[in-house]
Amino acid sequence: MDGCVFCQIISGEVAASIVLDRPDLVGFLDQRPVFKGHVLLVPREHVDTLPDLPAAQRDGFLAAAQDLASAVKTALGAQGSFVAINNTVSQSVPHLHLHVVPRTKGDGLRGFFWPRTKYAAGEMDDYAVRLRAVLEA
Image (cartoon, rainbow, N blue to C red; front, top):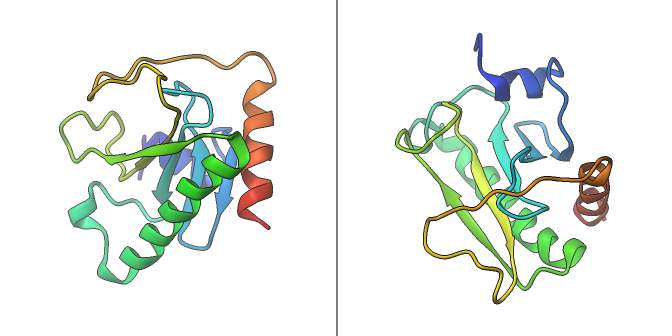
């Protein structure tokens, strides 16, 4: 879809730190993560919201979300994860995306107030490499 930054990432027009690359799905690091290692999972085909996702893609989408939730624990030493989807309201990009945010006890995340952090130069690639290594194993 014209003007969709996630479609541009999928097509390679916009650079991203890809951590999961499957025929129907792409996972990449959020450039403004809640916590470092925050991954966005998107379908390759432009779909606005979860209710718009074709039934044939639901299982693969959820399976990839499970894989990412496990990967943030194994690759990053997180104790768990926060997994969420916004539909329309609070959806900053109108392309279905699922957030997988690494969590640790006492990390400061409370409710739905999402503080944002930044990666140091080159640090984003390191997180992507670590997650890819677990997902590709």
